[in-house]
Image (cartoon, rainbow over all chains, first blue to last red; front, side, top):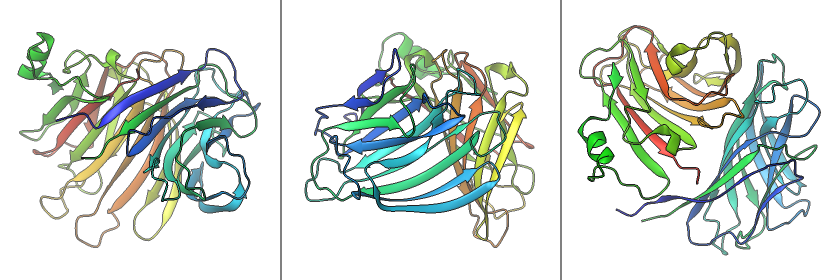
Length: 178
Length: 198
């Protein structure tokens, strides 16, 4: 049986960078999985991670739903046509936390090469440190839709309030159908 | 019970079939309890490929316990070398309410909850745990776990959980041991997969 889950590419930052971009993403799979293991340059305990496609920053193109836990608080939320990227779980911040701390997010992008469907994705992830507060312990799971039907050829990963720290890694995998 | 690679591992080590090296998601270890079992361990050395070949591990647990209620499965890395070094955050739902539950500075992470002996027979819980960055010595190891069960009865024990755990240690992961509250019931199953990072 042929393999159905294949490694495509991976970037590990050797120094701080504003974003991680993947260009010319292969169209040879049915779905993509993006696995993020990262840290933000933001001067706090954590910072949200974001994903966008095809270098688009157009506001109002993403709708998303999510459920979250932040220390002892749980909740749900909706971001409707307000942002140019998907806001996902948090990366580790760069102040008040261990240099070894990372946030982890697994993102699945569905039927990404199909130009008759608006792109959709779901993610789950979090960042949990020994800090007992909302910024130190955060997890979330969510889904989002992009209003565009363009095939996804570029993927950008960034943090919300600052750049990405060295050591951040992002790996992309492709999933085939039968 | 420490799980070895068995004949397939030996064949793979000898380069004689038994292990398909295609793709990026490899089945590398598996164990089914043939009797009630106090704990189950998996090791890099006992797997069909060394864990150093992989970026992440995926554990699928299908379990049931000999104790009543919702026994937890406390799990440690590297023969429990660390104490007070695990943190986690959980989203917990039981059909009527949801809650966010933090935990700090304990000596284990949870590979999931399993169905207790007082629930309908032959129901087993499922849990999937992603252990990320197991060979990255510049970062801690994180574990993302989804688990839950419903045993066709009205019970507050029926649960679904999503949990993110952090092991405050950047050592290479070479072993983990799962210790349930009570024993794993015979038939409980554990499958381990490696995800390539290159």
